[in-house]
Length: 275
Image 1 (spheres, rainbow, N blue to C red):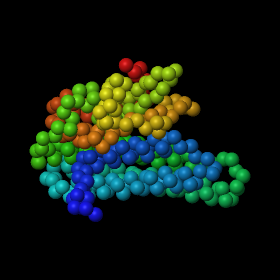
Image 2: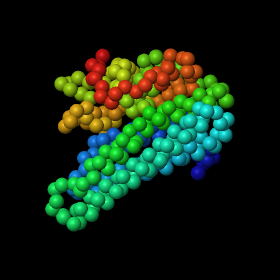
Image 3: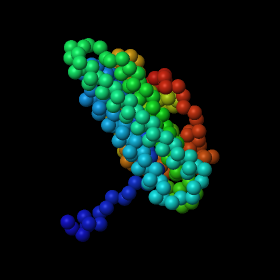
Image 4: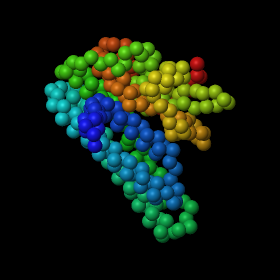
């Protein structure tokens, strides 16, 4: 190992960036579980989803420790943020338990009646409950990241320029993507954007992608309608997470951060024609 390699240590992620990464991990988990359809022989798949939920619970508690290691003043915002992440960890553990129980039921039924073509009673309900337990985790992680970012900025002011030069529409789109609310789809040779508030435009996403702030994960999100094609999830890159972390540090009165105060719209959204 050379001297250059010895001192080439990656800069550790801040607690805010860690929470944004956690939000992305929950979105990926939720997408995978939403696309999953249990079958009489799906024990191994259920086990993988159970392990994913358990891992997210562990990562959530690790994020809490990272926050505590900052030794910030225990303000109401900080306390709320850490409690919220602890709640996510607990809900993820419960989701893992329900998925593990569903797997055990499928395995037992498969051994008892190998030729059965129906699922044991309760498996669908267990999977649905597991989906519901983590459904709001990305939103909660970003809310906690917002509280931590503002508290950190108050106590340890720093010039945050990662979001400098970005238009308001780009900042809003990054924030929406961080919460797992943006997907893209294609129909009749044209691309469309689906977002919960309908305010994200395809031109904005192309600009952010060109700047290396977002990436598109093909066919990773559930379909917009029953038996429809899987959609492409829009995710933050590492640089995108850094830009959102800077955005979340902005005072609540600024237009860019005001988007976080908007209550989430219903899950069903109207497609937005690309421009």
